[in-house]
Image (cartoon, rainbow, N blue to C red; front, side, top):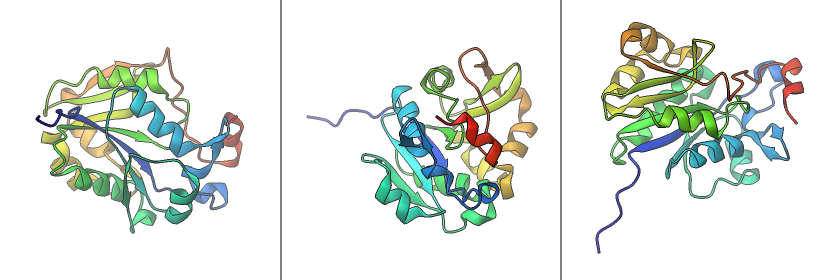
Length: 200
């Protein structure tokens, strides 16, 4: 009996941030509705249809492994996490090479207001390895973002510092399919002490 074909879209959670503006509290372990943020991010991707999810860890990686329920996920260590989100995006995409995935649906651990509904809406716009799709909020591009495999090398080459894929998406703006999600999600980051009020 042959193995079932896995979903071509792999989920990728960038969860390595150290929460510098939060007094050094790793974002992955911030609590929201009784669970660490990293669990919410994984759950949203799975609910959107991603059967495989890779999670990039950095700050307090051992504590995240110990305290968060991430069974079934591929955990990717980014020893260069202090260099910014770009290094985590590169590590995550590298971990997908050879996995059979044809696209990566990338979400950020510190956006709990972006749930399964918005993630599924972006996932539904997948149209093969050339896909380049991003959620939009009142017309402004945001997360999650879906990168077809044809874009991975270019994204990795352009991902530096905390910019992530911003430069690549700007250069390829004409190719990006924007999927409006402002009606079903709130794309605010949990970056500062004031932002903690958005957690429950």
